[in-house]
Length: 170
Image 1 (cartoon, one colour):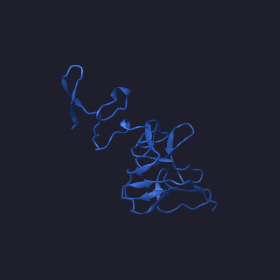
Image 2 (cartoon, one colour):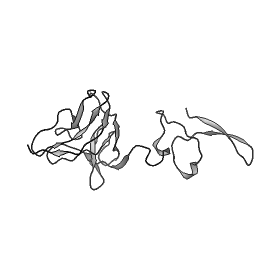
Image 3 (cartoon, rainbow, N blue to C red):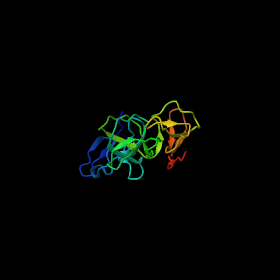
Image 4 (cartoon, rainbow, N blue to C red):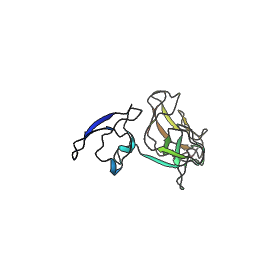
C-alpha cells in the first residue's frame, strides 16, 4: 500500500490527492513527502549523500553468491576475496547473487545479512579454502592471508568490520 496525501494548489485552490514518493532524489521531486518502501525503510535514493549505505556497482568478474566477501580489482570489477596464498583482502560483501558479467551491488560497511549457520558471538575470518567465504578458524600456512572480517550477531548476520590482512610467514 502506497500512502497518499492531499495537497492544495495555491494558485487555483483545487485539492488533489498525491501518492507519496518512495524512491527518487531528483530536483523535480523537491518538497515531495516520502513514504517507506516495501521493507518498511526509506529507499537509499531519497537519502542525502553520505547517509545511505556505502556501496559500489561494478561488473562481476565471476559468479558471486549472496554473502560472499569481495574486493574491487584495478579494473573496477568485483571478485571474490581469498585468504589463500596469492589471494586478495576482502573490502566488501554482496547481499545478492550475481552471474559473471552482471552489475553487482557491493557493500563496504554494515551488516552482512545474507549468511546462514553462523555462531552468535563468534569471530569470523576470511577463508583460504572457499573463495569469498568465512571461517571461525584463523588460517595458517606460509603466504596465506590472516584477515579478521567481523563478528556474528545472529545466526544469519555478521557485523562486517574487516581488518587489514597479515601475510603469514609460516
